[in-house]
Length: 476
Image (cartoon, rainbow, N blue to C red; front, side, top):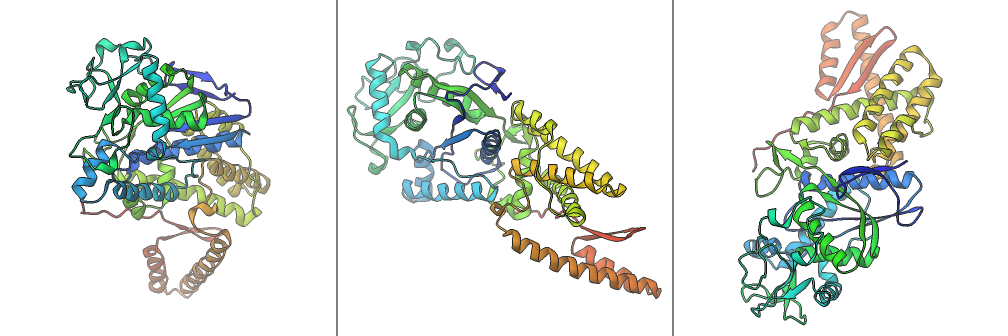
């Protein structure tokens, strides 16, 4: 039975989809103000694994992930860069897509942009005003605010009382009735680009951040859908406000709320403002994208990750050991049929327990290496098939074309490399046979310099590729 932790009820519950056999997911995409770092992309990887697991379990999965392409930060950053706000947003939207693809994330079923859904937002705001849950500012600014005190359940998602909440960042706006009320629509200001405004019954302006997701989720997934997700930092105020305005408008909204924990640096949430963001585009220059994905997949999605470049290197080394077992097994028994052990499935069914699932992979590899040593080829075939199946579910299969290498090309490269290394090993053995140890050592040193490690065994010399050593950058 699938079970997920629901942030709204603060407990793990059995998953009961709105429509049997189908799952609808909305997760909040990036505000495309600058390049994505690992803190952003962790959410994408986590929800990609969720999607893959649900698909494996036989569900038809629909994923909507928005792009916020109009927002205060975009206007500020674009002005600082001296480029139009829409060009600025599009530039970093493309970088976000590059990061998705680099880390093996399947594209969403649909990826709506906020600027393409202004009519839906106006319609939703109008409904909230008609129901008495929102009001146009009396100062003629064109602002429209949600009246938090009109909705008794406000604060239920984050477990807060209105009286204990801090004022909304726009609390000093004179048109507000309560400092905690939040903006649904922001009236046009002369210092802002005219292109960043749209006509409404309340005057020209642009949407508030929170109304965007409510409008897009409702349009593509209906009044009730299965899972709403995002980073833990979005739970309040963003998701709290989404829930309030959507339910106040008469929607049931999401059945389950899932939030992934942060990637931290020096104990603080990775963010651009702290200057501690590890940009995806930079990290994948130092480590293979597949290893970066493995680094983000290993911990449970609700556990924080303390970022260190060395930790990504350790994940790369661990993945290399897994790959080495799969390759050795294939040499002995050929390609094995993908399958999943029950322990892996149980971990994944229990709140997407990737930490437990990865532990099953490590245990299976250990048992598989023991089977190779014992010459138990039936066991080798069974266990290598399990490892292949588990890697595939996590989006980590080495031969998946998503990693940019055609499997046929990969096989040809492997044959060439195997042949070259085998010839050098033979030359080393010949040198040792004639007691030319200097030549033998020189061959070994050359291979070591290329990252090839030799191990002499009673059955002959074996070779493995050492995990890449991370490089460091002095650039900010």
